[in-house]
Length: 415
Image (cartoon, one colour):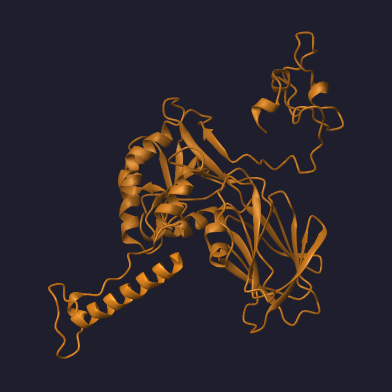
């Protein structure tokens, strides 16, 4: 809400969830009862009235922030690298030495510790709670890191160095890791603020016959598709307990804003900045041409039902992995996760994202220069003469005729 719509007295009102600093109104400030009545009605949201939110108060909608270390500085870091990448292994060794020289405990995934770095401790969530994480790879490495934190508890901030193929989630240049990690370590310095975007996740529960078969928190998307069945899958879509539509398509993508530039975009979905609190529903090759992607509130509960009368079972996958069969009669419930993934940014607000779609996706730009015919491939018919540029006089004659024809059309249009 714009600040000009909120009076000075309203802006001084305390939060409903706080019990500190309660005033009695004698100093001219609003009391708690003025700003937020006991029954949940708030008077600090709009002018001349009160509102009572329907959304859950447990889900935080604001996404962009500046972070500080609660303990003054981090003491333990988890480094996750792209598998099978020798360059990532070399950089991990270099970064680990740099961090350890500054008294920071470095842990890596157990397979990496056993196979490549026996001098580093293997990560165990119960034994090694980490202060922040480093990824060396592409977007897939970031997704893998997020999957290590399956429980809906507060996640450590993540700085992602680009060592992959595309990398919307990896804005940092690994050759300058010392500069960027120094900024992370000294995040409490007011002269060098550390920006983060809270990348929301979705809690996905697959249920059948009252039994929960799977539960995952996804950072990009959950996909329900036809799997090995050659025909379209039939699904029923509900949001917030209300029927929306029946779906006949190759599948349906339920995406976060972070995943809007992944599978959803390839299927025709919109690109959405990561700070927008929403979910994106993108059909895959729908039978109905009028079935366009939907953008719905982040707080909405989404339910996908595969009815008993469907032709076949379906398949479900979470961030492109952990594929499962979805049997007839199953339900997929998708709700907002309470705890997002704090992704460290190079710049304030959504600047990194815009630079990603323009610099990496080449959004609204030509992907490549128009091909030019090599001089060696220019062919002329036998006996055709050419000018100094290799163009045949026959082609020049045809060009002159075309120019004269266009000139005649232009004269006629002016008559």
